[in-house]
Image 1 (cartoon, helix red, strand yellow):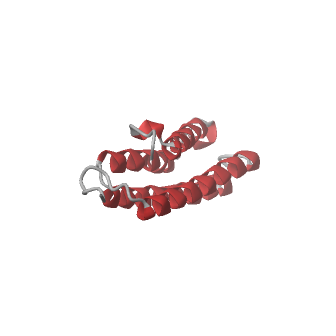
Image 2 (spheres, helix red, strand yellow):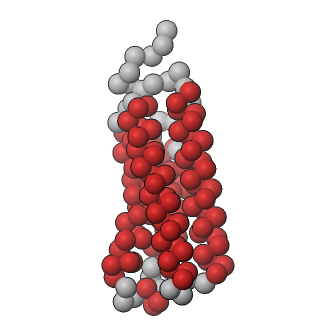
Length: 132
């Protein structure tokens, strides 16, 4: 994580932020306008991805960070499932569904890769002693 000083520096957080903005944009469509519960749920799930990355980073230890990354990955899967529902309910068009589904799949892979990197890293964060 050389060169990473805050969670905003993380590419995975930046991608999660973009996904959250995309979800917020589509939930402004008239098709979503009366489905308040679903609209809130998909917005909450997408926000959870970026928020858990940030919270885990701020814990300053790999073990907790990895735990929060797994939660973020789960929320990313939840967003993907909800995108299927939005598509099935005809709230979004196929091209938007495909684009956002691809983003969630890629972000999920990025999260998995980052988790693996942290698990194998010598860098453990300030809560854990560094190996000499």
